[in-house]
Length: 283
Image (cartoon, rainbow, N blue to C red):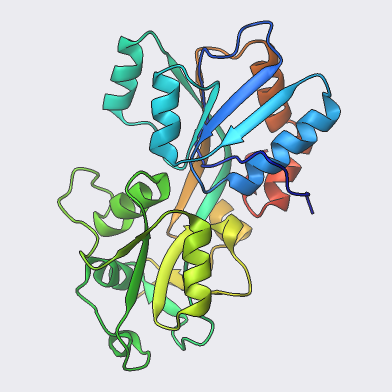
């Protein structure tokens, strides 16, 4: 178990900008909320092994990290989604050249309160629930209670991924949106806390936040497919329907302390930390 530090790493996509001077031993990381525990663990272990280096990690969402990369106010921007074409174009217009690195894999867990009898849902049922077409738990085999929808806020990469891959069925330009009544939560932890105390709530977050205080829903691609839980095996074999890569984006090729940190992330030790924080390694 990695001890807590003052450093926070957020998101699944990391973007490195020109902030770090070639000879600087200080690294600024900004981005999404999903990878906070993974980022903390990486930064803590890296600094233990490199006592002359300093890694500061802050969150705010994937969009925040990408904006920081574009504006050259961070060295590494993390996101739980890939950069969009318009974001890359804007970055290039400012002299920033985003370079993508996949550092792990994640399954987005759909969770309910442990007292909720519902354990299995199809992708179409999830779509109908989060768009507001299904409003009562009894419609999917639960009790006669109104569903409380929890979503990440719009700046979250997890929010964007879930919307594009579940609500919009893979069409990122589709018109589908979350139900107007969905409560937009500021963090994955906020969703976890609300689901733990609200028997009617349903929400989603990265696998790293799974705990006994919430019940994980097994998801099937359709009525004729198996229900699969978000596990390492399910993600690696492509059986779990809501899976995604975890990224690092750099401004050009990594140099200096940033390269040393990136090498650590891809090392055996760095990838073991991916496993220990409940994500799936790429190596």
